[in-house]
Amino acid sequence: MSSGSRFETLAAYCRAVVEGDYIHVSGTVGADPETGEMPEDAGLQARNIFRIVKPVLEENGSGIDLVIRNRVFLTDIEHLQAVAEVLRENFADNPPANTTLLTGIPAPGAKVEIEITAKRRDA
Image 1 (cartoon, rainbow, N blue to C red):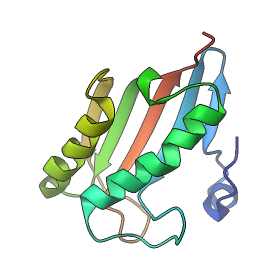
Image 2 (image 1 turned 135 degrees about the vertical axis):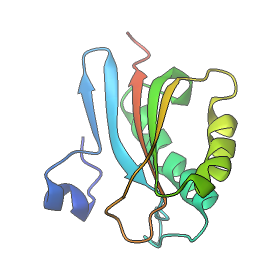
Image 3 (image 1 turned 90 degrees about the vertical axis):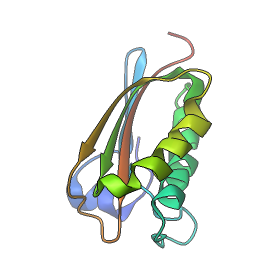
Image 4 (image 1 turned 180 degrees about the vertical axis):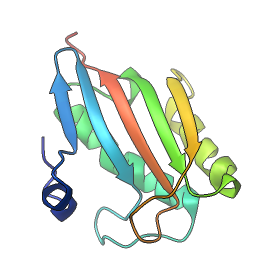
């Protein structure tokens, strides 16, 4: 499933792929979904990521409550607390397996990128 992002064409990927009972959502950075601008704050970036990912999950028969695995990529450990707060907001009732890595992110200004795998409701 493509979201229409120019980066999908540029880098030859889809926002999400449905594979049987699962939906795999590509790594997503936190640019504002309406303006495309990247906020300075890592917490705001993480909130934008969920603004992008939640509709993708729902459009593909899933939801935030069915996320079973997420991978969080941070550019600096100093962003961990702000991003962890957003993860707790979204996964408080049903936390998924998680991996957090410190790494470079190729999107200018991005401090966090999150990749998600979720079960589908009919699975």
